[in-house]
Length: 426
Ligand code: S3P
Image: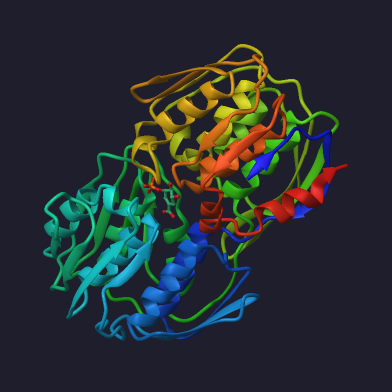
């Protein structure tokens, strides 16, 4: 894909459904009694992997694009899969599903693509093993393929060394099958969609500071879920609206859950013209329209407890920092190394190729903003958020940019370029 500088962006846009919430809707819908209807479900490849895994586990799911209907079979209704479950590129599918499979009375093997086969799974194998699960990394490298032998589980209190919603959610979902309450304490609060949604399905969840506890064996009842727009997808348009001259965009119906809204705080800190309107709640999730316009920005420091609330937005925040005056420092973000790609290395390599002043640190990056970007050949390393971040950078670079591996955008935002083209002023 070749991309050139544009003049401005104007108009309004509806962002596709939140990826994290879409995954959880399928999982909890499958484990609930009766029908669950999910509207504005994200039709990205990751969420389709979750649907296909649950279909193989015996759940009827009809995906009619506008909505997804799930015939839940209750907590103990899953059936053994005849095949290996294919989780594709999806870390959320792998880790959350492993928690559920640990409590079943059958054996399952799951595997995914080349990227998933490199991502660390010991972070879930360790706590699930403490609960009594039997999980084997078949290549003995702490990664997929995983063979999960469902077992009777006991409740534990796990002190997680990392703030990870996938780890927390994996343990909480296994906790549904434990013999006593299960708690997870994190160093900082990570996204809380599992907690919010499982409560709305009828689970007993208590939250105290950074500790979440779930009671075992609830009766979950099917729900109607309206998925808000994904702030992680909106982030690309927020940044585009801020860095491209003469722009003003309204981004409608975006989830602004406080465990996900770090990008809004960072933009405000940097001096962005950004406003929220029409703030309301649906299914326990906070939602708003976000209005952004071209802004004069200054660098900032991003560290500590805000990191889990913007972890997926760091690639596009790094692009934003290139257009700000002064230095932006991103710290405490070592988790970037174990995402769909090593996002510290890939951002530093590609932004350097475009002329930015950026250097990698052990736990993040330092960007000295203000140097104009020029076109380059960008290798996305088949990471969807990298491909989208550089598509936006290219819109305000001096010469043409070529992005390799652009198809990976399908993972989280199949209509990204259609939506972008609708805003571009010719
Ligand atoms: C997710 C949690 C985050 C995030 C991922 C989605 C989730 O991962 O990066 O894109 O849906 O729970 P970690 O839990 O590994 O931080």
